[in-house]
Figure (cartoon, each protein chain N blue to C red):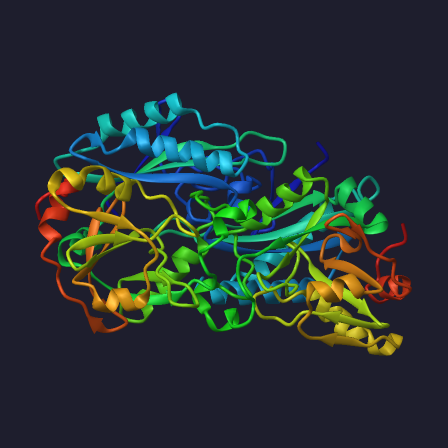
Length: 281
Length: 281
């Protein structure tokens, strides 16, 4: 296996095979904690401030103590310094904070792993997706705080199961849809459609706030691209000039196929990659 | 804090403050794993076979290797032998299996903690609940395997958040309902209503298979009680002669109040407790 790194919040590096989490940490026992993930390329962590900000937001939604921001910066720096960027030019960094055992301290740390070859290939060659029913209508979830809308919690079991289901059924990834056919998001990505030359992405109800989408919204106007945030349906996907999944690690993947039906390659693909500063293949 | 125990699948006991889980175990990083929980009283584990069976079912739904049943029995036996039943006559045992790090082995173990005083009090004095929207209609979830219907996965973040929300708002527990007002389940319990002298509980769609409900269904006829499985609504709750939450640790708690409105105490309460073999207060 390629090199992985584990950094603690005091800035020390620990062999990842050394257990550091208690068996009774609610992070394990109940998936109770928060995380964020970002890409580091050639020694530089992308959008670290934004990811630390979202980690803090997630912690607040889960009523966890504020994450030790300085500690996460120390841990990220330790990884950036020690990583072999010649051998592995891109690394995915996961910032993790567990709730801890009842009455005890949570665990905060940073994990680093090389961007794996399959993910890298998807960035440049695209993905086949399945449209999977997420079981709920997105609208209104934002008003139900006990469902943790907007938080990246450690309880990612359904997202992982959906990806496994896609792979077991000849696809690479998933777009979650609602029972009535609205487009939500991927298990670890956000959806963008090209509708008649305008980029569209769903509103933040029932889905996670995406840092890559925020970057797109900020930078698109200067590049002459219009981006609209609004409800999208599966019918929109079928009539789109192209579709993408955006995320912090893979950055972008064009959707080549959905439920076995081919989708066109949008003429805006190159412009989108330049806006998001996606490395050349 | 009261004594807690950690037993590994080889039957050894380990100090729970010793970290045994890797930081990169998907059980932590993604809440990816399964668990089950049961009560042990005075040296005897209740329904151990059924809980091991459900753990195996959960693992199958998550495409995990079959749990080491003999190992879990060794770990449970180690706890039952070492526990001080005089000091703490009831213990909650959690059987846990994580997916492990990418390409590595998962972690299997048993945690034991005393049944806490608040939970014990709820068993005999009842609970105040909030009715919280679960965000989805239950019907049809059973046909969406990527949502892991029927599995007790480690991704319990929403269940924990719902309980925190209830406690922060002057209640003790939660009954999840659908947007259209159907009754689902509690975050860690199943719902039973007394409607005109017949016990009712919702069908297994969008909710977890309960071992306590199975016990009720099996034993009620001999005690002269009828139990029906069928869709229930919030209106049914308001017209019920009584309501309970059933679970493996607390066993039973009558619902005294829902969304601030008092509910009656069913005349079937005593019979139900005898059927479920609930210890005297």
